[in-house]
Image 1 (cartoon, rainbow over the protein chains, first blue to last red):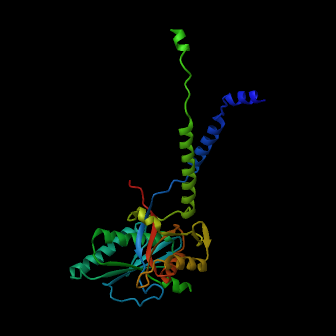
Image 2 (image 1 turned 180 degrees about the vertical axis):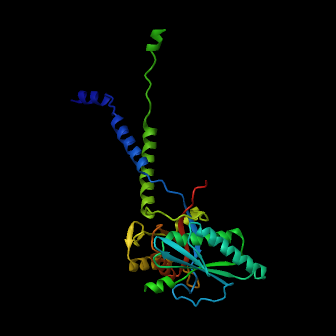
Image 3 (image 1 turned 90 degrees about the horizontal axis):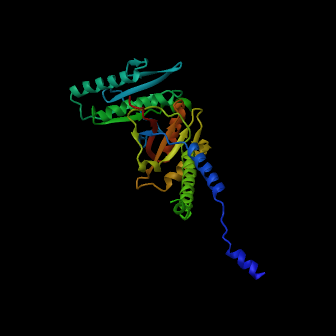
Length: 164
Length: 144
Protein backbone atom coordinates (compact mmCIF):
# COMPACT_ATOMS: atom_id res chain seq x y z
CA UNK A 1 0.00 0.00 0.00
CA UNK A 2 2.65 2.40 1.08
CA UNK A 3 4.75 1.63 -1.99
CA UNK A 4 1.87 2.35 -4.32
CA UNK A 5 1.15 5.60 -2.49
CA UNK A 6 4.79 6.62 -2.75
CA UNK A 7 4.88 5.84 -6.43
CA UNK A 8 1.72 7.85 -6.99
CA UNK A 9 3.14 10.78 -5.05
CA UNK A 10 6.28 10.74 -7.16
CA UNK A 11 4.30 10.88 -10.38
CA UNK A 12 4.13 14.35 -11.84
CA UNK A 13 0.59 15.51 -12.35
CA UNK A 14 0.02 18.30 -14.83
CA UNK A 15 -3.17 20.18 -15.27
CA UNK A 16 -4.30 21.08 -18.76
CA UNK A 17 -4.69 24.84 -18.76
CA UNK A 18 -5.94 25.20 -22.33
CA UNK A 19 -9.74 25.23 -21.66
CA UNK A 20 -9.36 27.75 -18.85
CA UNK A 21 -7.31 30.07 -21.03
CA UNK A 22 -9.89 29.71 -23.80
CA UNK A 23 -12.77 30.65 -21.49
CA UNK A 24 -10.79 33.50 -19.97
CA UNK A 25 -10.03 34.97 -23.38
CA UNK A 26 -13.69 34.63 -24.36
CA UNK A 27 -14.67 36.60 -21.24
CA UNK A 28 -12.02 39.21 -21.88
CA UNK A 29 -13.15 39.75 -25.46
CA UNK A 30 -16.82 39.87 -24.36
CA UNK A 31 -16.19 42.58 -21.77
CA UNK A 32 -13.99 44.56 -24.14
CA UNK A 33 -16.66 44.53 -26.85
CA UNK A 34 -19.58 45.27 -24.53
CA UNK A 35 -17.79 48.21 -22.94
CA UNK A 36 -19.48 51.50 -23.74
CA UNK A 37 -16.66 53.91 -24.15
CA UNK A 38 -17.42 57.14 -22.37
CA UNK A 39 -18.36 59.71 -24.97
CA UNK A 40 -16.42 62.91 -24.59
CA UNK A 41 -18.73 65.20 -22.66
CA UNK A 42 -18.39 68.88 -22.07
CA UNK A 43 -20.07 71.02 -19.49
CA UNK A 44 -21.43 74.55 -19.28
CA UNK A 45 -20.86 75.86 -15.78
CA UNK A 46 -23.62 77.91 -14.26
CA UNK A 47 -24.69 79.29 -10.93
CA UNK A 48 -28.19 79.57 -9.63
CA UNK A 49 -28.99 82.99 -8.21
CA UNK A 50 -29.01 82.92 -4.41
CA UNK A 51 -32.27 83.90 -2.68
CA UNK A 52 -33.90 84.12 -6.09
CA UNK A 53 -35.17 81.56 -8.51
CA UNK A 54 -37.61 79.94 -6.10
CA UNK A 55 -39.35 83.27 -5.64
CA UNK A 56 -39.27 85.29 -8.82
CA UNK A 57 -37.97 88.85 -8.68
CA UNK A 58 -39.56 91.84 -10.41
CA UNK A 59 -37.97 92.47 -13.80
CA UNK A 60 -36.16 95.76 -14.30
CA UNK A 61 -37.37 97.73 -17.29
CA UNK A 62 -34.14 99.49 -18.28
CA UNK A 63 -33.13 97.81 -21.56
CA UNK A 64 -29.46 98.68 -21.07
CA UNK A 65 -29.23 96.79 -17.81
CA UNK A 66 -31.08 93.75 -18.91
CA UNK A 67 -31.39 91.75 -22.08
CA UNK A 68 -34.42 89.48 -22.11
CA UNK A 69 -34.30 86.47 -24.36
CA UNK A 70 -37.61 84.70 -24.77
CA UNK A 71 -37.78 81.24 -26.27
CA UNK A 72 -41.20 80.52 -27.71
CA UNK A 73 -42.32 77.22 -29.13
CA UNK A 74 -43.80 77.66 -32.59
CA UNK A 75 -44.76 74.33 -34.08
CA UNK A 76 -41.69 72.11 -34.32
CA UNK A 77 -39.35 75.12 -34.16
CA UNK A 78 -38.44 77.58 -31.48
CA UNK A 79 -38.57 81.33 -32.03
CA UNK A 80 -36.08 83.52 -30.20
CA UNK A 81 -37.27 86.96 -29.11
CA UNK A 82 -34.66 89.37 -27.84
CA UNK A 83 -36.07 92.77 -26.86
CA UNK A 84 -38.20 93.55 -29.92
CA UNK A 85 -36.20 91.45 -32.38
CA UNK A 86 -37.38 88.08 -33.58
CA UNK A 87 -35.07 85.32 -34.82
CA UNK A 88 -36.53 82.17 -36.26
CA UNK A 89 -34.27 80.96 -39.08
CA UNK A 90 -31.68 78.23 -38.78
CA UNK A 91 -28.96 80.80 -37.99
CA UNK A 92 -31.02 82.35 -35.17
CA UNK A 93 -28.37 81.81 -32.52
CA UNK A 94 -25.66 83.41 -34.66
CA UNK A 95 -27.99 86.39 -35.17
CA UNK A 96 -28.82 86.49 -31.47
CA UNK A 97 -25.08 86.63 -30.75
CA UNK A 98 -24.70 89.54 -33.18
CA UNK A 99 -27.70 91.30 -31.63
CA UNK A 100 -26.32 91.05 -28.09
CA UNK A 101 -22.91 92.19 -29.33
CA UNK A 102 -24.47 95.26 -30.96
CA UNK A 103 -26.46 96.10 -27.79
CA UNK A 104 -23.27 95.81 -25.74
CA UNK A 105 -21.21 97.91 -28.15
CA UNK A 106 -23.90 100.64 -28.05
CA UNK A 107 -23.74 100.58 -24.28
CA UNK A 108 -19.93 100.68 -24.33
CA UNK A 109 -20.06 103.77 -26.57
CA UNK A 110 -22.30 105.52 -24.05
CA UNK A 111 -19.70 104.86 -21.36
CA UNK A 112 -21.30 102.06 -19.39
CA UNK A 113 -18.55 99.51 -19.90
CA UNK A 114 -18.19 98.82 -16.17
CA UNK A 115 -21.87 98.24 -15.43
CA UNK A 116 -23.35 94.80 -14.91
CA UNK A 117 -25.58 93.51 -17.65
CA UNK A 118 -27.89 90.65 -16.92
CA UNK A 119 -29.16 88.39 -19.62
CA UNK A 120 -32.42 86.74 -18.61
CA UNK A 121 -33.27 83.56 -20.45
CA UNK A 122 -37.01 83.06 -20.43
CA UNK A 123 -38.01 79.79 -22.10
CA UNK A 124 -41.57 78.53 -22.43
CA UNK A 125 -42.29 75.31 -20.54
CA UNK A 126 -42.35 73.07 -23.60
CA UNK A 127 -39.20 74.38 -25.27
CA UNK A 128 -36.61 71.68 -25.88
CA UNK A 129 -33.43 71.61 -23.82
CA UNK A 130 -31.24 72.13 -26.91
CA UNK A 131 -32.63 75.67 -27.41
CA UNK A 132 -31.96 76.59 -23.78
CA UNK A 133 -28.41 75.26 -24.03
CA UNK A 134 -27.85 77.06 -27.36
CA UNK A 135 -28.94 80.35 -25.76
CA UNK A 136 -26.70 79.73 -22.75
CA UNK A 137 -23.93 78.89 -25.21
CA UNK A 138 -24.35 82.30 -26.92
CA UNK A 139 -24.08 84.05 -23.53
CA UNK A 140 -20.97 82.01 -22.67
CA UNK A 141 -19.46 82.95 -26.04
CA UNK A 142 -19.89 86.64 -25.22
CA UNK A 143 -18.38 86.14 -21.76
CA UNK A 144 -15.35 84.24 -23.00
CA UNK A 145 -14.91 86.59 -25.96
CA UNK A 146 -14.29 89.39 -23.50
CA UNK A 147 -16.91 91.69 -25.06
CA UNK A 148 -18.33 92.50 -21.65
CA UNK A 149 -16.72 92.05 -18.27
CA UNK A 150 -19.76 91.85 -16.00
CA UNK A 151 -22.32 89.71 -17.71
CA UNK A 152 -24.77 87.72 -15.61
CA UNK A 153 -26.92 84.96 -17.01
CA UNK A 154 -30.20 84.28 -15.26
CA UNK A 155 -33.02 81.90 -15.87
CA UNK A 156 -36.51 83.27 -15.58
CA UNK A 157 -38.92 81.51 -13.24
CA UNK A 158 -41.89 82.52 -15.38
CA UNK A 159 -42.20 79.11 -16.95
CA UNK A 160 -42.68 77.47 -13.58
CA UNK A 161 -45.32 79.98 -12.54
CA UNK A 162 -47.20 79.16 -15.71
CA UNK A 163 -47.04 75.48 -14.88
CA UNK A 164 -48.12 75.65 -11.25
CA UNK B 1 24.10 17.71 -36.91
CA UNK B 2 20.70 16.01 -36.72
CA UNK B 3 21.58 14.20 -33.53
CA UNK B 4 22.47 17.54 -31.90
CA UNK B 5 19.04 18.94 -32.65
CA UNK B 6 17.29 15.91 -31.17
CA UNK B 7 19.18 16.28 -27.93
CA UNK B 8 17.91 19.83 -27.22
CA UNK B 9 15.82 20.01 -24.01
CA UNK B 10 12.05 20.55 -24.21
CA UNK B 11 11.04 24.22 -23.89
CA UNK B 12 8.01 25.03 -21.74
CA UNK B 13 6.32 28.40 -21.51
CA UNK B 14 5.22 29.54 -18.07
CA UNK B 15 1.63 30.64 -18.52
CA UNK B 16 1.12 32.05 -15.00
CA UNK B 17 1.93 35.75 -15.67
CA UNK B 18 -0.27 35.74 -18.75
CA UNK B 19 -3.23 34.29 -16.86
CA UNK B 20 -2.70 36.86 -14.09
CA UNK B 21 -2.74 39.68 -16.62
CA UNK B 22 -5.83 38.40 -18.39
CA UNK B 23 -7.73 38.09 -15.10
CA UNK B 24 -6.71 41.61 -14.14
CA UNK B 25 -7.98 42.90 -17.46
CA UNK B 26 -11.29 41.05 -17.07
CA UNK B 27 -11.86 42.48 -13.60
CA UNK B 28 -10.97 45.98 -14.84
CA UNK B 29 -13.40 45.84 -17.77
CA UNK B 30 -16.19 44.41 -15.59
CA UNK B 31 -15.90 47.23 -13.05
CA UNK B 32 -15.47 50.07 -15.56
CA UNK B 33 -18.39 48.83 -17.64
CA UNK B 34 -20.80 48.90 -14.70
CA UNK B 35 -19.77 52.27 -13.29
CA UNK B 36 -20.11 54.16 -16.55
CA UNK B 37 -23.56 52.71 -17.21
CA UNK B 38 -24.99 53.39 -13.76
CA UNK B 39 -24.05 57.04 -13.35
CA UNK B 40 -24.62 58.35 -16.84
CA UNK B 41 -27.81 57.34 -18.58
CA UNK B 42 -27.84 56.91 -22.32
CA UNK B 43 -29.05 60.30 -23.49
CA UNK B 44 -28.64 62.42 -26.57
CA UNK B 45 -26.97 65.48 -25.13
CA UNK B 46 -27.41 68.96 -26.62
CA UNK B 47 -24.58 70.51 -28.62
CA UNK B 48 -22.63 73.49 -27.32
CA UNK B 49 -19.31 74.65 -28.77
CA UNK B 50 -18.49 76.68 -25.65
CA UNK B 51 -18.72 73.64 -23.36
CA UNK B 52 -15.55 72.90 -21.45
CA UNK B 53 -14.08 69.48 -21.07
CA UNK B 54 -14.65 67.80 -17.75
CA UNK B 55 -11.77 67.73 -15.30
CA UNK B 56 -11.14 64.96 -12.81
CA UNK B 57 -12.35 67.22 -9.97
CA UNK B 58 -15.69 67.75 -11.74
CA UNK B 59 -16.40 64.05 -11.73
CA UNK B 60 -17.38 64.11 -8.06
CA UNK B 61 -20.55 65.96 -8.95
CA UNK B 62 -23.98 64.55 -8.34
CA UNK B 63 -25.31 63.57 -11.75
CA UNK B 64 -29.01 64.07 -12.49
CA UNK B 65 -30.19 62.61 -15.80
CA UNK B 66 -33.35 64.04 -17.36
CA UNK B 67 -34.89 61.87 -20.06
CA UNK B 68 -36.89 63.23 -22.97
CA UNK B 69 -40.11 61.94 -21.43
CA UNK B 70 -39.41 64.07 -18.36
CA UNK B 71 -38.32 61.32 -15.98
CA UNK B 72 -35.39 62.05 -13.68
CA UNK B 73 -32.81 59.30 -13.19
CA UNK B 74 -30.10 59.26 -10.54
CA UNK B 75 -27.55 56.41 -10.37
CA UNK B 76 -29.75 54.13 -12.47
CA UNK B 77 -32.91 54.76 -10.43
CA UNK B 78 -35.91 56.79 -11.57
CA UNK B 79 -37.03 59.26 -8.92
CA UNK B 80 -40.12 61.30 -8.24
CA UNK B 81 -39.89 64.87 -6.93
CA UNK B 82 -40.19 63.89 -3.27
CA UNK B 83 -37.36 61.35 -3.57
CA UNK B 84 -35.24 63.85 -5.49
CA UNK B 85 -35.78 66.55 -2.86
CA UNK B 86 -34.78 64.08 -0.15
CA UNK B 87 -31.66 63.04 -2.05
CA UNK B 88 -30.62 66.67 -2.66
CA UNK B 89 -31.20 67.44 1.02
CA UNK B 90 -28.97 64.52 2.04
CA UNK B 91 -26.30 65.55 -0.47
CA UNK B 92 -26.23 69.19 0.59
CA UNK B 93 -26.48 68.53 4.35
CA UNK B 94 -22.83 67.66 4.86
CA UNK B 95 -21.39 70.52 2.83
CA UNK B 96 -23.11 73.64 4.16
CA UNK B 97 -20.94 76.68 4.88
CA UNK B 98 -21.48 79.41 7.49
CA UNK B 99 -24.12 81.11 5.31
CA UNK B 100 -25.94 77.78 4.94
CA UNK B 101 -25.01 77.49 1.24
CA UNK B 102 -23.91 74.08 0.04
CA UNK B 103 -20.61 73.62 -1.78
CA UNK B 104 -21.99 70.50 -3.47
CA UNK B 105 -22.24 70.76 -7.24
CA UNK B 106 -24.75 69.13 -9.52
CA UNK B 107 -24.40 68.14 -13.15
CA UNK B 108 -27.68 68.17 -15.04
CA UNK B 109 -27.60 65.84 -18.03
CA UNK B 110 -30.68 66.67 -20.02
CA UNK B 111 -31.74 65.00 -23.22
CA UNK B 112 -31.84 67.19 -26.31
CA UNK B 113 -35.67 66.95 -26.33
CA UNK B 114 -36.24 67.08 -22.56
CA UNK B 115 -38.92 69.69 -21.80
CA UNK B 116 -37.57 72.80 -20.10
CA UNK B 117 -40.23 72.65 -17.37
CA UNK B 118 -38.59 69.51 -15.93
CA UNK B 119 -35.07 70.98 -16.12
CA UNK B 120 -36.31 74.11 -14.38
CA UNK B 121 -38.05 72.10 -11.66
CA UNK B 122 -34.74 70.27 -11.07
CA UNK B 123 -32.94 73.64 -10.79
CA UNK B 124 -35.58 74.94 -8.36
CA UNK B 125 -35.25 71.79 -6.23
CA UNK B 126 -31.46 72.33 -6.12
CA UNK B 127 -31.92 75.98 -5.11
CA UNK B 128 -34.38 74.96 -2.37
CA UNK B 129 -31.70 72.70 -0.89
CA UNK B 130 -29.13 75.54 -1.14
CA UNK B 131 -27.20 73.91 -3.96
CA UNK B 132 -26.24 76.72 -6.31
CA UNK B 133 -23.37 75.21 -8.31
CA UNK B 134 -25.00 73.81 -11.40
CA UNK B 135 -23.54 72.70 -14.68
CA UNK B 136 -25.15 71.34 -17.79
CA UNK B 137 -23.71 68.45 -19.76
CA UNK B 138 -23.31 69.07 -23.47
CA UNK B 139 -21.61 67.51 -26.42
CA UNK B 140 -18.72 69.43 -27.89
CA UNK B 141 -19.20 69.40 -31.68
CA UNK B 142 -16.35 67.86 -33.63
CA UNK B 143 -14.22 70.47 -35.35
CA UNK B 144 -14.40 70.38 -39.11
